[in-house]
Length: 305
Length: 328
Image 1 (cartoon, one colour):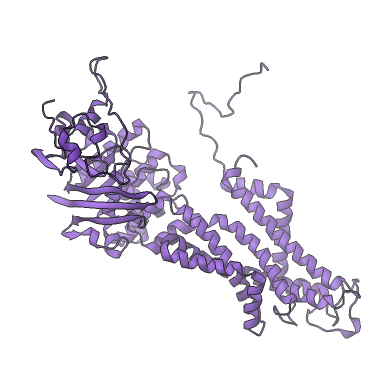
Image 2 (tube, chains in turn yellow, purple):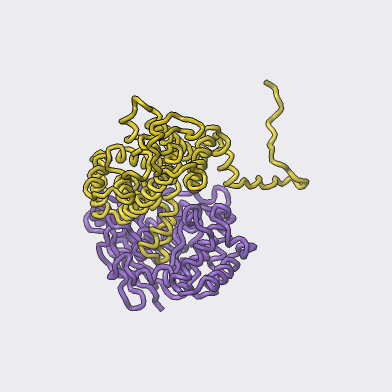
């Protein structure tokens, strides 16, 4: 086709010198991709709603989640109780709302704890190499070889009492090997960069190099993994609670609500279904946010999306 | 006055294929305020030699297999690689400029952070003073609008500008010696000249010694006062740069100079003569001279006896060769 030759879209000023290409803000690029796709946006909205629900639980919950009302047991949804009541007549909606607090608390703190410990282990393994690397990585191999649910049951079962922090500990511990692996892999590739050698050449100590040079460069890709891990941990909490070694009654958590409800699954299936849907939404929301962040920060997708 | 006396350092690498003697008995001296050139082709051990002096070789696979580095009356190789004594010297008394300006600055930290880090580390400056000094340094190396640009990130700088930042970093603690590992290989020729002029100007002004590691003979000819020529992990000829350029005595140096065109030469006046063959594989080298297979001057003795030690052939002029090709 004898079309016109391609003309550069860059502006040329009177002197014939090309103007510098416009500076695109990183944030704008990020939000264009992140908010520009429906699925990510939906996930983001779900996450925001869940977080707001957890923060404002006392304000928006219509009833006290622990208040028994034995006359109105096992009710189907109605105008008084939007999501019905459970076997003790407690309002399901209020319990779901308060359960959000527990789920998010556990999700965030377990991921945070495993991220810090795992990241430090991974960094140390990558930076020191040699026997440090071997010991740490073989240790994570051992932990990874055990199914995580068994590991968590083991910990939760050994530390009897079933408080929230024991659940956090169990779930957090289960997350360490994965985190350690990810961090180690990232750090190994980052540490080959010249600026790490340059940092050593100006006399930085091992720890300082690790924390100021390697960590900031190795961390961003892990944000994605961390976001997704939150969904996984909430699921893990539900699993433990379902098995009766998670958060203990009467504190409402989505997991123990499913367990409570399964006994009445024939009379009122809503009891198990609603917390199940809540878990599903949360996991979906966090996974979408994680995916969105990955797409938005992945330099290989620059210009494609 | 000899500031740094490197004696016979040996750095070996243990690889799957065998032992690589990357630096095999390298000795050189750095005098106060002097510019020195360490020349040789790729893989001859130039970088390894200076990284060994700085103790920046990762071990394993690297191994410090011997030698001494005398600096201020102490042998630096006695210190542990990343111990406090070595760290106190690196970055403050002996500093380094790396080859790749694009990758030797940390992409996630601002220029300010990276410059002040060294100052806070070695000179115990507080944040404000370190920042002032950093701006002053940037001005000194010719970064325009320094007080604003100091808060930029490395990706907002061009390659030449980044190398200026690296130079500023190297100069920040008023070091006694700067090692520049191919400082201008990654930038274009115009910038190369600017950077070298800048470095020369700064080191003369600050009375700092500069060791330029390069494969570019033009660079050393113009800037270095003394030259060490390396081949296969050893120094094979050393001397004042004038002497070496005008009267090279080692067959390898002669070959190098014959293969470089000179500006102002008429067409057909002189035929460029390449050095035939390829540089040797450093794994499991024979004890004889490593240049032997490519040498045009070899005599019977060369194949029978080990690689000769450096011997004096004139004032401050040393070669490691059985043949002396003076007069050719």
